[in-house]
Length: 484
DNA sequence: CTGGGGAGGGGGCCC
DNA sequence: CGGGCCCCCTCCCCA
Image 1 (cartoon, rainbow, N blue to C red):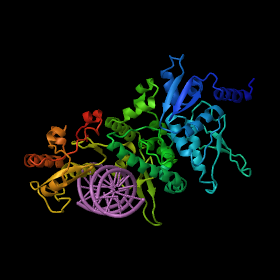
Image 2 (cartoon, rainbow, N blue to C red):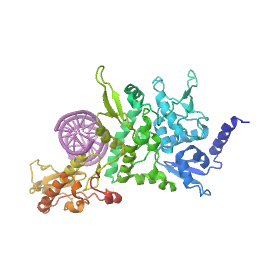
Image 3 (tube, rainbow, N blue to C red):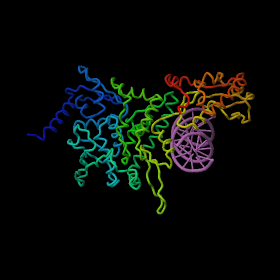
Image 4 (cartoon, rainbow, N blue to C red):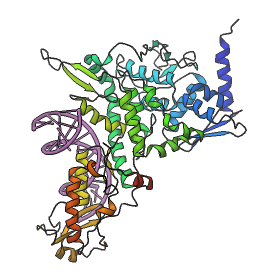
C-alpha cells in the first residue's frame, strides 16, 4: 500500500528542518552568504554535490562547507528552494543564471525546465513578464533521466492564467533528428533567444574586457566550466573575473536546438582529483588558468562536437540553399568550417599563440603578430612628440604606463623620463628562442632584426616594460612556442 | 568628464 | 583549409 502524500510530506519536513537549522550538516558558502542544508538531500539532488560528497563521505563528524563563487546567492536560493520543495521559481530575469548554475551543479531537471521555459516563451506573449513556473515535486525526483519528460506547472500569478502542465519534449541525445537542418526553426528560435542572447553577448563583451583586465593583472583566463556568475555581475555593473566558458555550459544550454550532450560540457573530469577538497570551484579556477587546460578543453570540445554542424539555409526564395556552420554555443553561423573553428576559440578560451616575449597568449597568429610588432617592436619609427621620423639611431623606444612609443633623443631629453632604460635582450626574454622550425617567420625576422637592434640600440637603452609581475609563474614556465 | 588613441578581439572574405 | 588582410567594435588609458 502506497501513501502518495508521504513523499511530499517528507520533503516538507526536511524543508522545515532546513529552515530551523535542524540536523543541517552542510554549509554552502555562496559569495559570502551561508546556506545550510542536509548532505543527503544535496547528494540526492545534484550530480555536483554527489561527486563532492562522495569524495568526503568519510568525515561526517564535522559540518561540511562548500564554497561557490560562480553564481549568486539569489540564484542558489532558487535552486535550494527547489531542492527542498520541488518548486522552481523561474523568471525571465533569472532563468539564464539558474540554468547556468544548474549546469554547474549538474541538475538535469532544472536544466530541462529552463530550456522549456525559454522554448515556451516562443508561444507566450512577450508582454507577459515574470513567468513563474514551478516544477512538480514528482518530476523533481532524484532520478535524472533526461529522456523522461519532466512536468512542471505554471505558477503564474495571473488568475486568468490557470496552471498549465507542460511536457518537455523528449531529449534525444542520440536521436536521428537533425535539428540543425531546420533553419526556419533556428530563425524562429532566435526571436525568443534574442533577448537572452543580447545579455550573453553583452556579457561576452564584458568578459572579453574582463579577460583583458585579468591579463593586465597578470592573470591568464580562468575557465569555469559549466558555471558562471553570468549576467548578475553585468546587471550590477561589477567586473567579474569570470571567464567565457560558461559558454560551454550556459550558452550551450541556451541553444535549444543543440543536440550536443550538454552534460559533456558541464562535467569536468579534469577536476575530479580536485574534488577531494571542498573549495573545488576555486581549485577548478586555479586549474583552469593554465593554457594546457584550455587546450585540453578545446580538444574535448572539438571531439565532442556534433558531427553535423551545418544548417541548410535559403536566404532568398529561389536561391540555392547554402550550407552554413552553426556554433553549438551561440547563434552565430559561418560559411566555412574553418571560420567556425576559429570562432569556437572565443568559447573554448583556447589561445594557441603565445607571445614568446611576454607570454601573453592569443587566439590568432595575426593578433600575436600585431601584438609583437606594436608592443615588443614598437614598429612606428616616428617620434611621438615632434612627429619627426626617427631611425634606430636617432630615436629609442620608451614606455610610459601601458604605452610604448618612440622618441627622438631630443624629445627624450626634454621629457626627462623617470623610466630607467632596460636593455632588451630577446634571447633572454624569449624562452622559446631555440624552438627551431616551428617558429613563425616573423619571429625569425624579428630575431635577425633584434640582433641588429641590440647592437645598435643598446647605447640608448630600449625601455621595455618588464612583465614579470604580470605573468604568473606557472604561465611563465609554461610559455611555449606556438602549439600548432 | 570627455575625446582620442592604443590594444585586443572577432567576423568576413580573399588567396 | 590555413593564412592573412581588412574592417569594426569594445575597453582602457591618458591628456
